Image 1: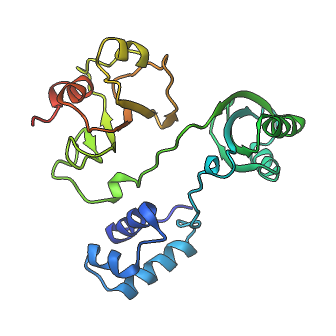
Image 2 (image 1 turned 45 degrees about the vertical axis):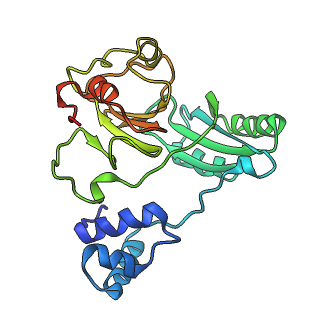
Length: 252
């Protein structure tokens, strides 16, 4: 059963998802103009309700003796998906399992191994449960950010650009809503690069479409209404904004 939350809870969740370890109750209290004991009480209630499920370390396994992180896309077929997810999670080397509401590719399994032989053994163990591995990918980098609607409110609540702290400057993650008149709409990432719509320092790391999160490849086609997450070392140029937002691109 879901539980409603208010704007104070939303702000607490936003700050905790940014960096829970270094975020104190007094800091959050200052942001929402309540007392620190109120924030602590709210956090306890969010934990009891199961909304805050835990606090996990963000570990770069590649920095630990060069370990490899892989993601397996699996299909459970006629098996009970929840049961398979729990059994796979018990396999040594598996660190995360996600269930998807679909027939094919309904499990995403993240694993860590010392080398390719280690990863092969994990894959064989997964397959021995009767689960099909449809695809596997080496995780190169991961980008995360807090849920923007829980954060500071923008002046324009329907702005097609979120998560932008200035449109140029230091490396940052940006989220753009592809508009109907966008030049990139209908283009693959490869063709958008080739035609100059995407500069070399802009990397599309995720596309949210119809409630699904897609990991893009060069052949992924951008569609109107896509919520695209980009990473850029130098901010987003006017041309890039125009390519995604059309006439809704903000002027400098």
